[in-house]
Image (cartoon, rainbow, N blue to C red; front, side, top):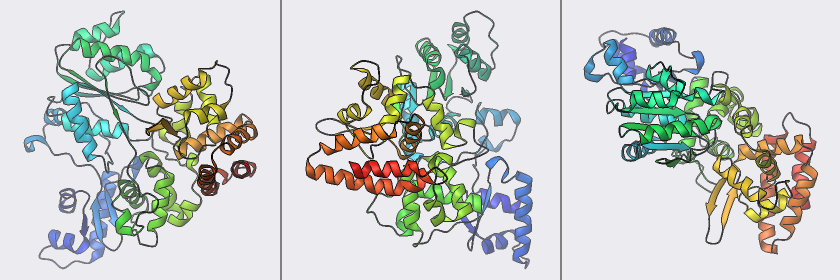
Length: 483
């Protein structure tokens, strides 16, 4: 217990083994083996390593670190009621959160002022993690009335109100459950977190708008890959973790300043027992985080490959769509499952456009997407509506320059879209169109674009072809050269 409390008092810090021994056995000389035995006993008691949960990490050559989540008890009391009030109705699973502290603070302030905020972003970007952190920070302010509602398992939109009621401890009996729910709670001060809304978004939107309009004390925090588009909603777009850009300093101390690298290092240490980043390995870590676009889920999944294969081999063999995590929720067990979840919610036109814009590496224009996607059977405006829908559903990233909007597929999404392109036997025709479009660029712009795309196709060989038929990689690279 002395060892555990000493480590837990300084979560995230690396405590030297000698310092631990001096604290626990201040007047006794003991061997290091005694410390290892007691740490092993603590891990066993806590179930360290089960279901992906880690509490004490061994940092090779340095000491031990408590890597679980620590939540202080109010006024030092440990009564059951005090614990419930402190935690609210939130999952008790630990949160691994790096580089999001400012976001949590800003979202909390936004929620306090606006009452209704949607965390928007693609799958795996960390929306749920941020929402839980905001909820835990707000427990005292809401007197424990913070309720988390995970909507992932719902298949019938009619059950949304019932799911919220269950979280609130309410049994609904009327034929209009949404109205009954509003009547029950309109006078209470609550924070309701609705997680994973996109597949039942219309029902969630109607209920959220009712709750917001019928009370001035109900606060709503939703997470979704698409906005609810109702009155009172304020959008907060969740961005990827910062990662070392091309051309930045590649020393260990330099790359470790970036949250994406910090997360990767921490998760590898949790999987392997220890991980010390050297200057020699730093460029490989930077490259991996760039390939993964700073997406927390992708980084956590990739950490397993690093722990098993070593850093250099993991980067060389990185297969974005096959990264897996057995203990995650179903839609997050692989990156392919995460993207399948989003893809299955698209209209037919949006699916066609998504796969047909896969040849673009980096940013592209609406006109470029229209040319390469070709006819999609939805009339002249179909391509524009599809692009708008993909942007709204967080599958295409956007930026604006002085003249027009620029669009981009994240690396994981592009790898997925290329698979869909091959499934539909459209690789030849779409890459030919892409080559024709690029050929129409002014010479300097065309040369620059092809240099980028051929370099990316080279890098993508490990992402797309490992374990797959060789035709896919050859087609991607041939399309680049033909352009």
